Amino acid sequence: MKKIILGITGASGSLYALEFLRIMSRQEVEVHLVISAAGEQVLKLELGMEREELAPLVTCHYRIDDFAAPISSGSAVFAGMAILPCSMGTLAAVAGGLSGNLIQRAADVTLKERRPLVLAVRETPLNRTHLTNMLRAHEAGAIICPAMPGFYYRPADLGELARSFAGRVAEQLGFTVSDLPRWQG
Image 1 (cartoon, rainbow, N blue to C red):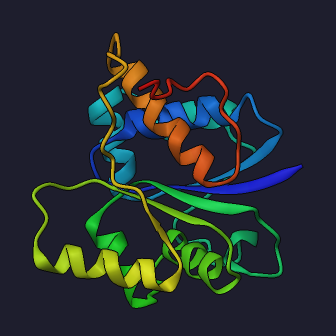
Image 2 (cartoon, rainbow, N blue to C red; image 1 turned 180 degrees about the horizontal axis):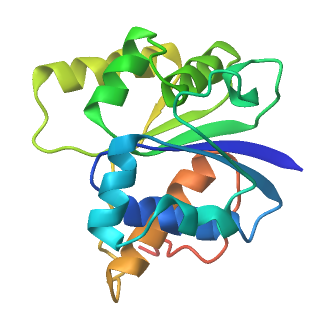
Image 3 (spheres, helix red, strand yellow; image 1 turned 135 degrees about the vertical axis):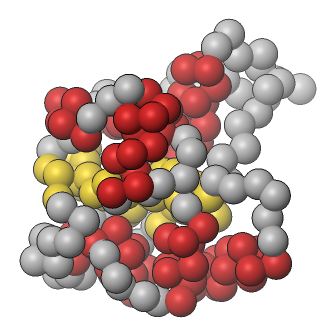
């Protein structure tokens, strides 16, 4: 069974993370979760949810300061990692090779092991530093996947919109999501 890591940071977009977890629950995959303190705050503000409410959708959850967690080492084999949503602070840490918390360390390990790392960056407008950090992270091997959902399929609600984007993130990690809306021309 594949194992992946999901990091949730304090950028707006908790609904994307929730829909990603729902998609992963229909796959043959173990999800190992880390949420930053700001990510927990945003989850509460945007969805009225506590971290514990995500427990049924994940295999393991680690504290942000748990550097002894398996995801902090390349010897633990994971198929990839998504940071969804990815704050500009986390992007900067990844781009700079910093490991100040477990999300950053797991991202660094994912890159050094040449596994897929999807950064669903969420900010607007972008300044030069943001753009430079995206390029640096890309050059290090990360997949930059800004939270820019499509509207061509006319989503019925925010959940459908978030599910579509979360499915795109899942596909970047090598999963097939058969019920995604597809461009038909």
